[in-house]
Image 1 (cartoon, rainbow, N blue to C red):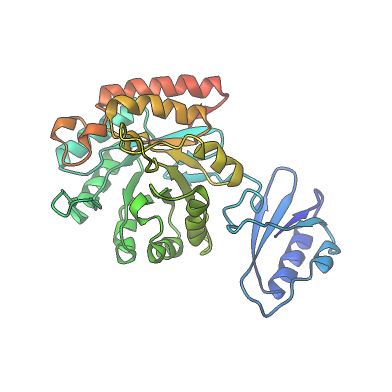
Image 2: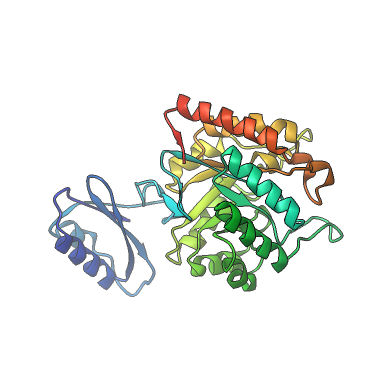
Length: 340
């Protein structure tokens, strides 16, 4: 449920409405727009009756509306203003397009720093790199662990790029949070509910990737777990779903981008690297994602893909990434958007 306040509602009236709803057993979320304030209500107890007629009569209230979606906090109806995050001085969401780039895995000091400087020069806003890697095979490279996190922190110090890296289990969140600016929850962990709860409690920005077998609603419900802890710093990421088509690693669901933008207020990114699994397809799908309304991209870049310990086949070389960023700038201008 949301309460839309009148344009001329005073701060005292808003505080009074909040106090009344909290007495009725509701959590409240205040969203300030350019024209009016919206108060979101999330009922967390059945011990009180929510008296909507009383709420509508309070001074300063314009109207009360029900939100029928199973996800409340992630819903556009609940939160009518787009969420905009600021991470390490970088704006995510709004009119700007944000690019996250870097290697799938942190492999060595030289590999990471070479990549970090290259993507920074090309126009990336944040650096990605996996220190802990969930792999299909137990014999595949699993990441450098904390040593990889230390290298990511070093790369941030040298380039100024905020860091995005994956966290795989609740107990690892304090460690990863001490190094990373954004916690990434990968596709395989999208419905790891203990991890989602812990990420919400951490009050850190979260990049939440859609599982290859998940519906849009299931992705939004996963985001709801994080949001339910009062952590509103969530970014949704489409990275391809599993289908019958074997010509790509996954099928990039371009429909999901405008669908998510219509259903939710959260920023929406695309990951064409994991979606296609082939570097020669990444640029085309990345451009399509931006044209469809994505707020940003996550791109895998490696200076020597043939030597990569993971996902080299889907990684762009730095020069190809730089060319792609130039094209993204043109598309952004064509659809009246800017780069972050």
